[in-house]
Image (cartoon, rainbow, N blue to C red; front, side, top):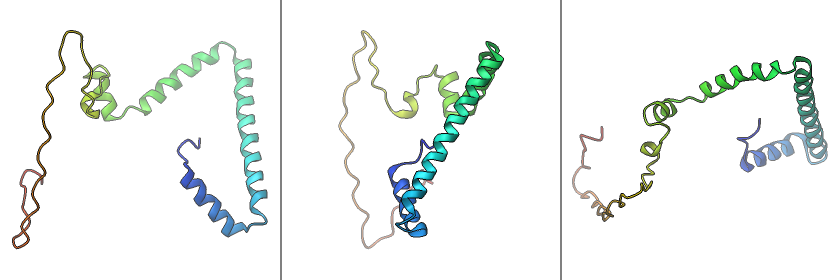
Length: 132
């Protein structure tokens, strides 16, 4: 649920809590929030177990369409291209062409392109038609 919350966001929440609640009430608020989240998680896991016991083996049959929907939800255009056109090989998009096939030597290494020179100070900046 909170998989995307990093340490930076946690720090911001603590600072905001410190400003809003004050240093006296902040530890109690954190403790209350942690207990509420733990109770909600325990309630949901208990509810899942209760459904599994009540429904029985059909519970897994109900979960299959939901897992298919979850797979479709994660299907972005890039994932659809890699799955259907490239058989799951996403090296075209990620730039990882380093798969070595048996009997095929790796391509030769090319030197990197030279650094472009800075534009002249007295003239206008160069205009690249292909870039626009």
